Amino acid sequence: MKKLLALAILVSLGMGNAAMVFAAEKTVLSAGAEQTVDNDKQQAKNEKKKKSEKIKPVKDKYEYINMAWWKQFNDDILNDYIIKAVENNKDLKMATLTIDEYYQNVITQRAGELPQLQAGFLPGYGGIMDHEAGSFLLPIIASYELDLFGKNHNKTTAIRKLYESSILDEQAAYISIASSVGTVYINIVKLDAMIDLQEDIVDLRKEIFEIMSVSNAEGIVSTSDLVKANQSYISGVADLTDLKKERTKLLHQLAVLTGDSPNNIEEYKRIDYRELAFSGLIPEFVSSDIIMKRPDYMKAEKMLEKAGIDVRVARKEMLPTINLGGMMFFNATNLGSLFTTSNMLWGFGGGLIQPLFMGGKLRANLKAKKIAYERSLKNYEKVNLTSIQEVNDSLVSINMDKEKLSRQKKIQELEKKDFAMSQTKFAQGVIAKLDLNQLEENLLNINKTVYSSEFDCMIDYISLYKATAAQNI
Image (cartoon, rainbow, N blue to C red; front, side):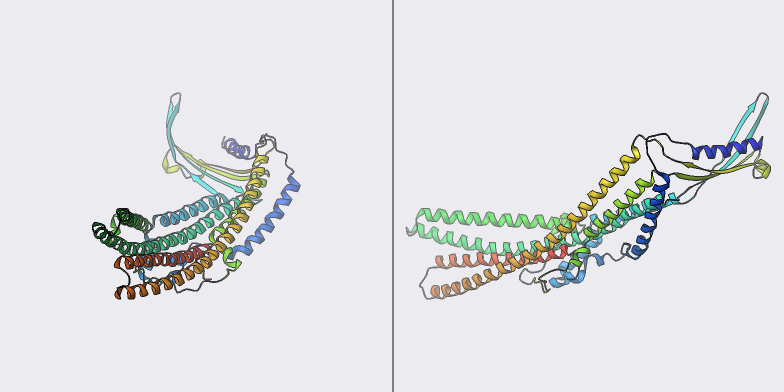
């Protein structure tokens, strides 16, 4: 009887593994298998060469953002905000958690390459006619899919590519957040300058309006000119309000970027706008090696490699699946004799499953993976072109804005000389106070333009920093 049970177990193992699946797939086993094995050997060689190129997460996240570059602004307050963002930004926390999630997916998939062992305990009670008895059953089941063609290993490698891509996403996130913090901070300092100068303009326009009010009362200035002066004053106050509103919104953004509550913006310090200066050297061109080290470029490369692996896996789905398995049962009416050999049944076996007819599923899957590979290839080419474009755009912006700033500074110098001469004329009584105020407003507007261009150049530098992935260039 025990022999029959053991034979039944063995047959059940074989039946589970050797059953034919009738569906419509045309597969040439000999040539297909041989070609797949050759491809695997070549892939194994390529992977061995790239083993040292595997991407791993870094423990020191400051390696991503290159803090030495930010120190070229000579602003400790800016550096503190970037450090605060690295430590507290919520998007960066999520990017790190995503890496951990993908790593667990790698472990899960890699488990499919290993043997599986399961055990259970089944106590029960039953009877036949007048005979009733309790029994204890302890099944132990082992199974293993023989990865002869490397399909499961390829699946693990594909999941690992996603894991490595998530590391590159994290790097890109850190660079992006650091760039955003720097850009927002500089725009806030820029608005500090604009507000400071605009307040001086508003004071001048108010003084002009008051002088013209007196002159209008004496019949020297027309009512039309007085109305225009009042409109200019009101417009200046409205512009000042808009600038303050924009600065408050940017302070809210800075708070969120640094992982803080927007309610704390009153505590946010910044450097005096007259002291902020960039001391770094900006190159005239950027090497292509810099572009190839951008995280989005490397991610596109990883996804292209994954798409190629997915194609190989789809081909191997048409090849036989070879399974090995074994079972062992301990069955007794009492626990004391459960593990005796007289109460043990065992069996092991193996089987082969070859898809014959699947309604076109496997062939369609292979075509879909090939299409996905072509899409990944086009995306890789697009990222390459986009990377070059972003670097070139940044360099062009830097050169053009620096040239514009140079011209504006020349105009500023001329305006300063003109105003100095006007002050002399006013002291000599040649021109009126009203004329001097209008000339001073012109100088303040020129100063606003120069400061705006200076900060725009700094933002251009940050754009180049981001386009080159925070690398030393």
